Image 1 (cartoon, rainbow, N blue to C red):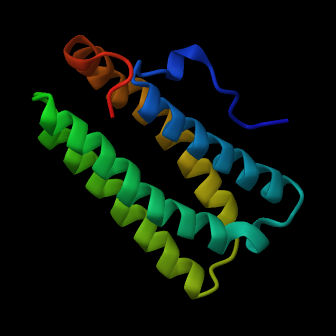
Image 2 (cartoon, helix red, strand yellow):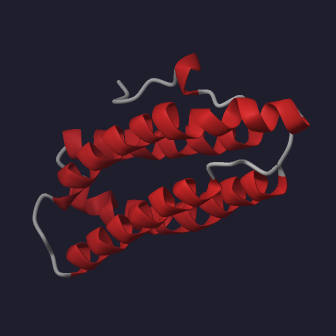
Length: 138
């Protein structure tokens, strides 16, 4: 059983970005399964490395599209992205120092952050971008 089941409410309307979001949700579900099975430490480094890449690649992708299409909330979105990148880096540093139960903490954080971010923040750009370039931009 997954901790996050993908639902239509998470769709931004931009196919490429929604696909990236789904991939992140799959990774969160993988972390959940590992934590549930008491294997959190085994996957923590891999998940943190994936998050490091994801936050760079996905956020650049989103921001590039927002800039290209003149999304008015771009700077606010960049600041939110910067906060998450810093949080991931902090957790990565903590993991290197052997902090206990970080996998469970990361899972809780990601579950809340991702769903709130997609629903409250990312869904703001979906209709805007879609109205200017269609569902298949990017």
